[in-house]
Length: 232
Image (cartoon, rainbow, N blue to C red; front, side, top):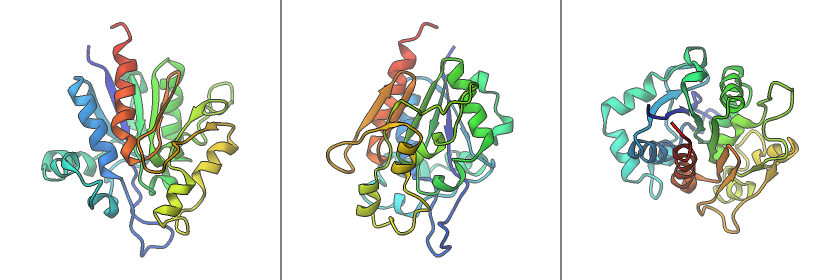
């Protein structure tokens, strides 16, 4: 039976300032999707509200708008997957081996407090499944608690988009909070690469996190390696 992956994408299309659009960072989904497809995994997309997931305009420019993103955007069937994402109440977590949170600054708004996503994440984690995030996707792990009331990320090694990268991307004045500091405040052992924007992924047991858009492929490969090491 093939392994099953649940991808999480945003429903938000703008910052607090409506003149600044945001959304899903497309290549973070497409890189992971391609890795999991090559491994023969089944894949589903969910979002906090269900329905459409807008694309981050900056993700549709060089250098992150690469072949995988262009192929996806040119495929009506794949774009339809982002127009009709599932909502959390439509998801039976028992059907999935891993949950993968994608990024884009938009997720800072709708991932952290989604009780539906928290439920799915907790259930997958406590069943021994894999929880994964890339870039700002780790905002989806900020407030997820386990059945004993503890935070999932407390005491665990985690990476995600660094504040230094926010500054270099010139969005530090737009983002609603400092995600790196928010993660540290939850007791996570945050770490990052020496240089900004290079691929960096961290594995701590069943928790797999990637730092930035360039880390999506490496992160997915680490998830796939963990899944394939498990008996059927």
